[in-house]
Length: 234
Image 1 (tube, helix red, strand yellow):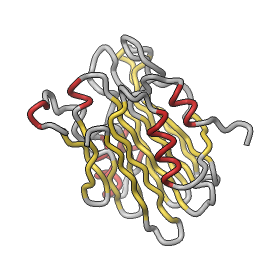
Image 2 (cartoon, helix red, strand yellow):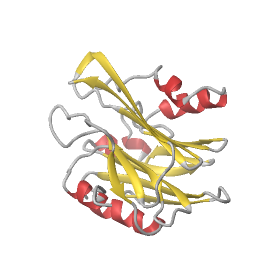
Image 3 (cartoon, helix red, strand yellow):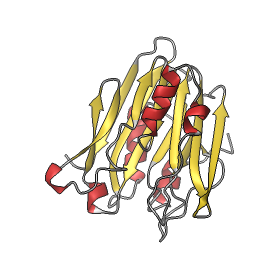
């Protein structure tokens, strides 16, 4: 498909996309795909690893003695509620989980949340869910950096197309303040299997700023999954 972007190229050309989510369907059509990465510029942000917790993952301080402020950096990025996989860049994972467990919707959950309180960046909260053959993405951000005007955007992909993913990230690039992601999620090519995607993302993230990466392939016929976790701090 001519309109598919190269995920590796997008990452190479952006020194600081911040945190990012990719959701889609594998090239062979057999699996749904989720990927989530974190980056960091401060010592506190870089002092993290992903660890498995239940059916999902959580962030953890690599060196607990160096942990300064756990707010906004220690959370569960991935949780599973029934047949739904939740991926977010903050503690709104728990909000979405709680709402889904009560029979409520992804949108209802995120309408109770807003961007992060980290002026002047007001970092967007990005979130996604995988359900069956489809998925949804969301971004909660300020209007041009003005905290008085929150914006909530939702993107519904009712049926994933083989070899196609959608990529949303917190920042357009580096800067001060950091410019929030704008526009629709970027439509990217998903080729090969889980190891190829893991390698493509990790190798193209800025080596100074990358921190951790999670990738999961979920088989549509059995519901079984494979997971890869890469941590810079090992």
